View 1 (tube, rainbow, N blue to C red):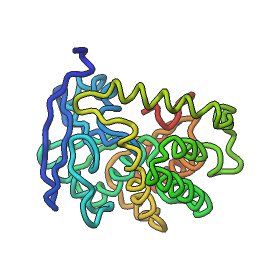
View 2 (cartoon, rainbow, N blue to C red):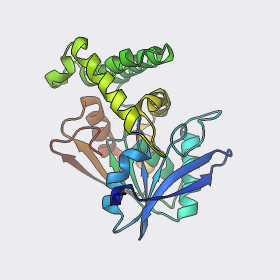
View 3 (cartoon, rainbow, N blue to C red):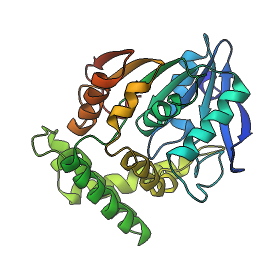
Length: 275
């Protein structure tokens, strides 16, 4: 077993009784990592391992995946804040790294949870421009409809539109405009390899795909609420990749203007999955 794979497992019980699981490694001050959409704790093992020589790292599985329980009734940002609150109380951690929707959860939680002192947020997605979010939501709805009908490859093809059609002025690499006849065998291969390699506490891509709508639900909850993040008191390091879609950059820029204690850095050559 490589160093990257070594971890212990822990669990907390959220306010509504749902079990929230996490992977733990390292020693030092507590740092909680929150993943984003179509993701789980397994995808942040490399980052966690790199940080584990200076921090006790807790990589949480969000509801509906990995070590954690189901989404349950009345799912939304409040449930996510309650889940994080339970983990903060058990670990006595004060630092958070949040990616995408994990960054949004971190921001929302910091409005009421004073124990959060510092956050590093990689492309936290919030509702900024209606025209962008209308297109994004339409793509996600089509994606989810194909999944519900068992058309996994069609859903994956639709997901490519996030990179090419949310913003008409977005300059996207030619790869996203390749015909489906090329993408289909590639996606089949990706799913087959993933299914073969996933073991233990890891989750397959196919199993993670239906969770996307819940992450997008969180984003939609922030419609018209950008200014509420002026009340965030924690220190924030805001990161984005230069190759990420424009609507994600717009979210980062909007937050950079309202967060009171923020430093913003764009990382050259990185994209939304780089975290």
